[in-house]
Length: 351
Image (cartoon, rainbow, N blue to C red; front, side):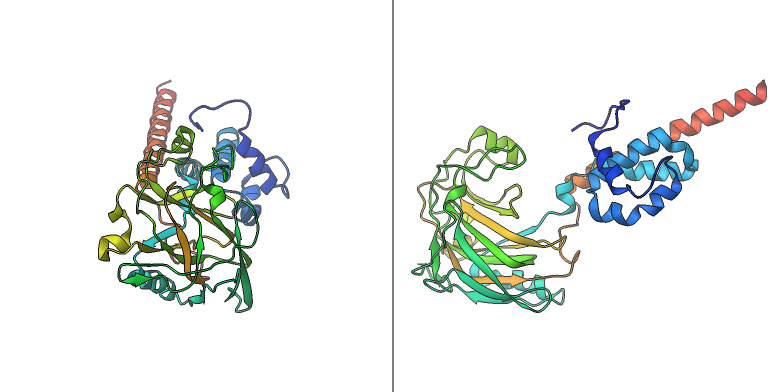
């Protein structure tokens, strides 16, 4: 998406801006911006706010003082150049079993509690405590069929065993699925698990067995590589929240990419996610190491941390670079405006 060209037709994002300020009527003025602040922050996305704001300033900038207009343009340009994913990206943990405490400590350091539920053979519904202190349940289903996911058996590797029963989620490629927003479907999606929470949480994790034992040379479709920005090959672990676009938090090109094997020679690990920018009600998880045996289970971990307390809102390095570009562009714009203003004033005096 390009924001470098000004047209005479408002960009689509301006429609969101208009929607969020529907309680105000034209002409646009400073009171509109102040009156709409609450709806703007709650309803509109950062990108639509930035696009709408910048368009408003270009078209109706005369209602603001030069100083305020420049500050608002700086903010709008910086927001336009900041990827939304960097503003609300879940923090993913890929840990060896002895290091699950890293995940737990991140949660308890915020003042929140970790609730656990050992996976039991034959059981697909588990209980936890939600953010309001009330009992809630998570229902586990097979993503492809939607049927209850019934665990059975256990898993051990080297000196370590998963702490409860397991679900067999050995990857199969077809049919692919999980593509949203025009993105390609991902092979392996329908071989995974879906966890549906009766009350939202923002931290969740479980144990994995037998990942990264083989199948490193599997080649992902070109469309999957480009749409999701993932490596061409590997045995991967995918995750998606609330039916949104999937991410690949772990990808094995050799056995030591499994933290359990790297530290102790055990093909066991833990995958956890914390999203302190909000809450989620559904998590979908699967692998794409076709030909590989793969299990998930052990003990489920749940928590609800305070918003903004862990990662999530911390800009990534690329985001910081883009933010810098936005500030530089705004500074150049201000310098040109200032120079033009001085030249205009001098000409007037000379005349």
